[in-house]
Length: 311
Image (tube, rainbow, N blue to C red; front, side, top):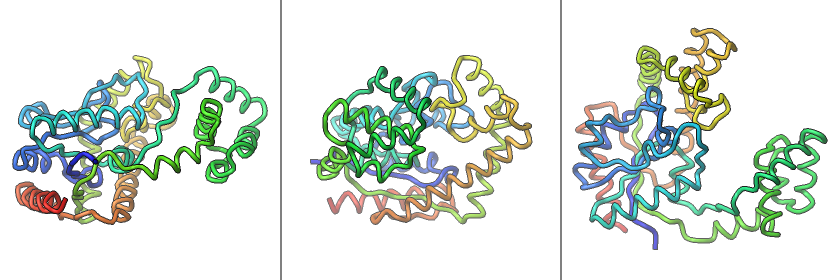
């Protein structure tokens, strides 16, 4: 049977953190972060992590769990989040999942095919083959063993093509078949999902203001420190909004003014994609966040309690 959770989500900069603290206190809940950048230690300025005072008010999980130099996958998130969800429930408290990372929420509410462990030697050989013969050579090889996966993947999607070939080498079964079997299984968690929303012009103004605040708070210095520590511009930890744009500036690709423009534009586009995803979710309860946090939290609590009562 799926674990019982509640989810509070919404686009970046909508105001989830303050509402989540108030809602968690009312619901006797602990917060399970669903933010793909908050998992990294050393990423502070552009991640909008809850403050120390907020973390003292309500226990938080899945924040600062891995160094920025290390990779962290969706499967890693699911494993650690489920541990936190089960331990929270065992203490008689509600696991409240808070964040806007679609894949993290999906990992808890849908089935997830994890597959065999990575094979560095095989990946290296396949990458070398792609360099010698081109991406299309690997795509053709995949089509020979898994036509379904090959039809779904672009020949330029080298990362996923290599993973599909790796899974086939390790298991003898096409990844498309294993993924289909996984989708037929039961998801690990279930519960009501509430999404915060604001007038788009207000949301975009908040995004722009947050970007300016990040710059004033030392974002350039933080990214410079990460680069100096060996966190490359293509590392997963450097793909968050703010980090990748400033890394480009520090590496001489454009000037500081352009970095800020890109940061604001890219974050607005991300918020738009988040809203598009949430509108496709059939059971989301929407709450207008253009009012005091206390009022918003009270409505969130009412909707979550109603959703839990139906299960």
